[in-house]
Image (cartoon, rainbow, N blue to C red; front, side, top):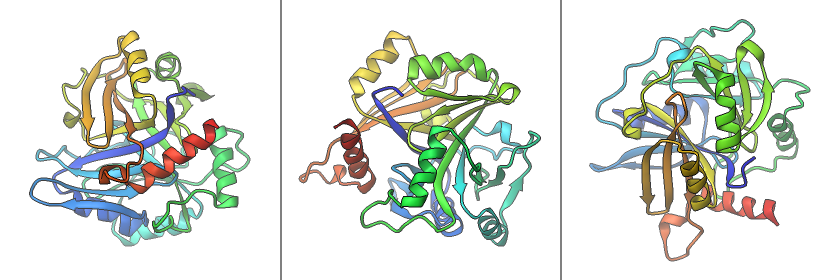
Length: 301
């Protein structure tokens, strides 16, 4: 893993009305709400996905049409579920629309949230020797991942386990995501694509069936996007510049820096470094950011 990358940090879903969408993930899936804004200038809900990752539903004036099949989704977050039937029952009782898997043997249950964005639930594979699965099993037994002053994850969902992207050529993207971005290759699944390590207990699945696209002019053109949580922002930025990776956005935020990039097929992802805790700057007081930086420091000591 690249020395700059800690793990998957955020999945951002843009919609006309982010409040009901965020409350779906809170009330139906049971993901703890971290914070929300509901004003004339900003509307969003942030829910915790386990470890130090968050899912944000955020306002966008021009909604994207819902997709009909999983291959058309920009990004699919898949949650590691310890009681699949219990979570499926909650979804059914909420009237959730389920979407069939297209690959034989795919054990993921796919569903659409209230605005048509696709997510999934999957039980862990018993005896898996992949690094994120081993760490997830250890955390599940020891209960080592929690956020201070935050509701725990539901007893039947551990957190985000996989991020699935459908692409034209999964194997052709391996050099970019491994050598350029710095992710580790976990598994070559042959015709079904490849798995890469996003850090922590999360894998990135590059699966066939997607399409190439022109590089977006702005991240707001996309219905949803994923962002890496990392450190050493200048070093990561320089490495991407040396590799001539297209930049979609360069953002300086109140609590950090965030760049969006496009991979060789035009799929967009971000890299963000949050500022260290400053007692005089409330923008640096987010619980998940402080916990993530503390864990990062311990892993480097």
